[in-house]
Image (cartoon, rainbow, N blue to C red; front, top):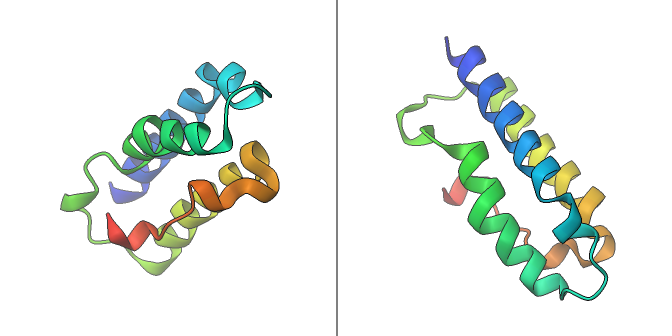
Length: 89
């Protein structure tokens, strides 16, 4: 069941990225603002319900991979604006 929950969260966060792709691609918006959007809209989609999870290492690595890869894809070298530890949530 936990595998399905993590899959659902990753799918949801991916969909949120898709809906917001114009914001992340907009060269006139600051990287800091894009990081704030990521933290406000993408991370909650990814981590919804996580307080009830007892994650195995493999599932944590999948979530971490999404977080790291998504940030690098959309923010490139400016990823520092939205990067923080998933374990903080």
